[in-house]
Amino acid sequence: MKRFICILMLAALCTSLYGCNSTGRVHDKGYLRAASIGSGSLTLSFFSEDRVITAKGSSLNEALANAEVKLGKRIVTGYTELVLTGDEENCDTLCCLLNEWKVPPSCLIVCCGEDGGDILAETDTETLADSVRCARSQGKVPESNIITVLTEMLKKGSADTAQLSSDGRLSVGRLGCAE
Image (cartoon, rainbow, N blue to C red; front, side, top):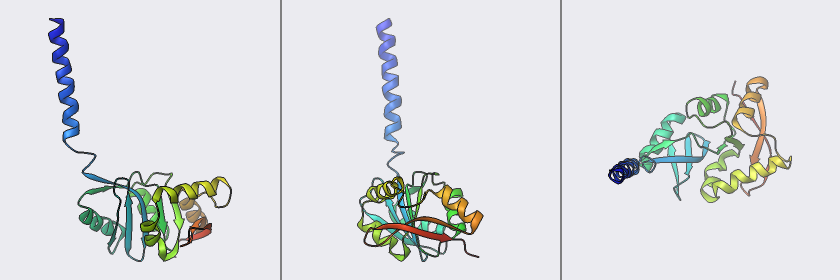
């Protein structure tokens, strides 16, 4: 009798574990690793995809919705590590990233002008994020997480953050709020 109950419990456990995997919940989403925002376009890099997706829209959320159509999956933004921004970015964009996209507080905000999409397409995202973190630990660039940058922008109207040139050099950049 004991053996029968153990076998029955093991079968129930195996069936319940198999059920979670067969629904494909993890694989039917695109987990965003990095984004480049500029001039009405959005370039996205994912944890599980080798390619980047570029989409356009009249707003950040519309561009994200268009990217979901291109990718064929719902895009999860809650694990985003890096956002490359153009010079025209402002407080509203960062507020949208934080409040609507729900990027984590550790998400790095890096200036890069209009080259962000190209940089993201040509360079490994992990390498980019690690370069910014390393430069920060060496004191070469200021703290660049979204909370610090957005707080400075709201207090002072602008904030220093890391700036990435098209040749991969990091320096200090500045983002400002649009008036």
